[in-house]
Length: 111
Length: 115
Image (cartoon, rainbow over all chains, first blue to last red; front, side, top):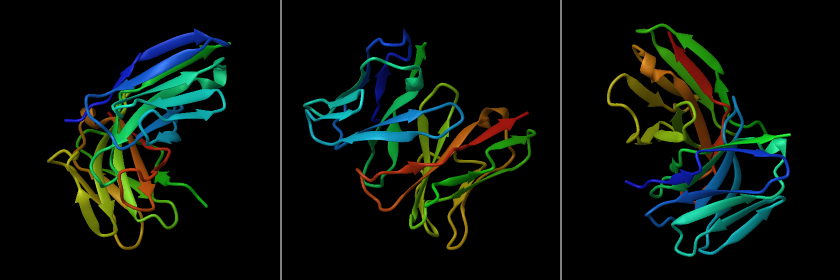
């Protein structure tokens, strides 16, 4: 069974601080996706990483895919209250397009 | 271009009743996925459908749950004789094509509460 383990599970920080969220697995994935979900809403795709060692930047967010394509990280620089939400990593399982999700990291950024 | 539409947004059912959750995929998308999310947890895959076909139902409970995606109209997730443990948020996603790296777009979800 493929599993994605996210850490930490909860994170509460002050505005302006930096943080990193991790997504680890013992399985190799062809790609990995990061989503952000706000309360009462559905997940919204932030980025897809495909190549081992790949780094993608989205404003203050930096995403990295491990060289072995088993793990990924999301780094946020100078967090803002608007970054508050549930961050989910997900990976495709098989060729059908169905996704396996990590259990999520709940981030709270206090003003 | 409207996104994935789910309705109702909130649904309250008494134990033993039936719950019907609807999902209209994005225009042009013929691949639909249903996921379930418990509070403070990630999403768990339930079923994958294409028009008039169930492709993968490996995440569906064996009893009381069924799904369809007819030729015309929305995809329906049906839960018969609901129990308290069915209370969760149910999300639908759609994609343009099938594949490991295909981008899926999620609806806002239906929050089912069984009382």
